[in-house]
Length: 149
Image (cartoon, rainbow, N blue to C red; front, side):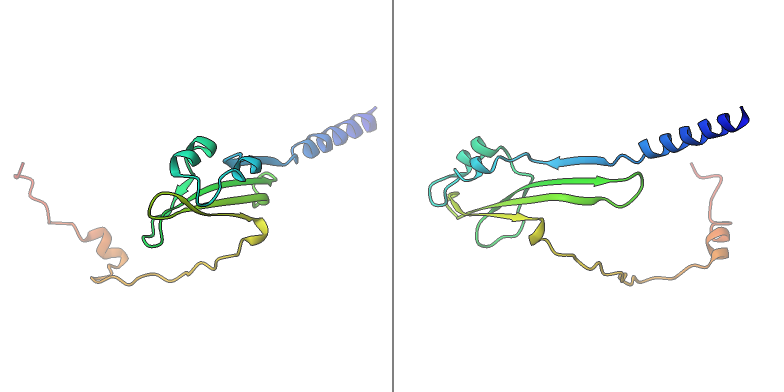
């Protein structure tokens, strides 16, 4: 009887552990239909027609220069518990406009077009004093006026 109880508890613990390992799937951004994106024709479509067809963009370019660009971004990921997210699918549709607000170019980038970016770990030096531990703790003693309101 004791073996049966131990066996049942072990199998139950294993079953609970395995069911907790289902991946968490997330989909963020736009659900663009590529057939609708193909209807956006360079030289013909305007900002208004793009908004009617696709909706407002995820992001708009902030760099001045050769016209404005709109970005429609989609990402599907999955991860297990607290582990790092794995990108299943990624799509970025870039619609560039000319100075007359007419579509100049439509580009579609996928996960395969992405590149890793190295993060710089440097910090910018600032002027001033670097206070030690005791200076930070005892630095304000005597610097207040209890009579002032």
